[in-house]
Image 1 (cartoon, rainbow, N blue to C red):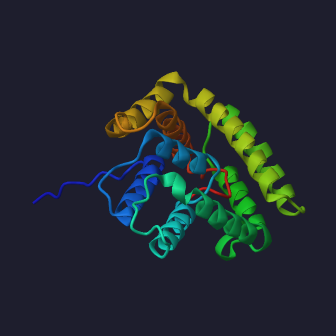
Image 2: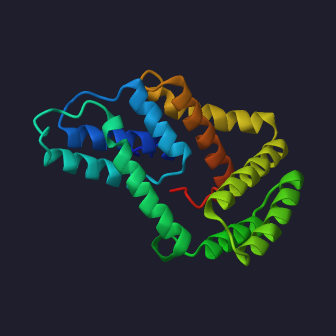
Amino acid sequence: MSTATVPVPDPEAAYYQAVEEFFVSRRGDPLFLSNPDWLLIRKWRQAGIPLRIVLRGIADALDAHAHSWSRDRNVGSLAYCAAEVDVARERWQRALAFEGEEGMRVEDALAAFADALEVAVVGASGAVVARDLARELRQRAAEPRDPAALESWLAAQEKALVEALMADRGAPAVAAIESAVDAELAPYRERMPARVLSQIRRESVTRRLLESHGLPRLSLLQL
């Protein structure tokens, strides 16, 4: 007897969906998110705030509301939670800057990126970028660093790497990845603003392309 395979949600879309479901369930109201709410989640995602940090901020905001004088009034928008999400983000970033997230040191993360780049099977253009990037990652792992500047640098390096991988793979292979992403995101097309869906699509294509070569996202902030 065969068992139907449950599709795994796209990791990028799952971030948005998890925030929506958590907020709606905690708010206790069946209304779903508005366009400004989706754009706020997009802002958090673009800032690289991990899902658990966003959910922690939402929980803190709604817990505070439940004990406030206005507790009999429903929270009407996700924007109500924005300040507490910012507080949770600041606590997390301080921990990341001084100790590394959950005990993981930044230099260890950079070394792990370099390890993956050195063994990845890629084409000619990708090999050049991967080799040079691995060498620079090892140099930066041994130097003092500013987390925000490092994250910005990693984003630029990832973009260059992805462009090289796309050139090696060729337009038909890239189009196949994009088609697979579009098919998976189809259920969200009517629910999300175009800007949000565009970001999810871009991040999903990047993730899938890197994963097809055994490479992680080059970010200290990714899930």
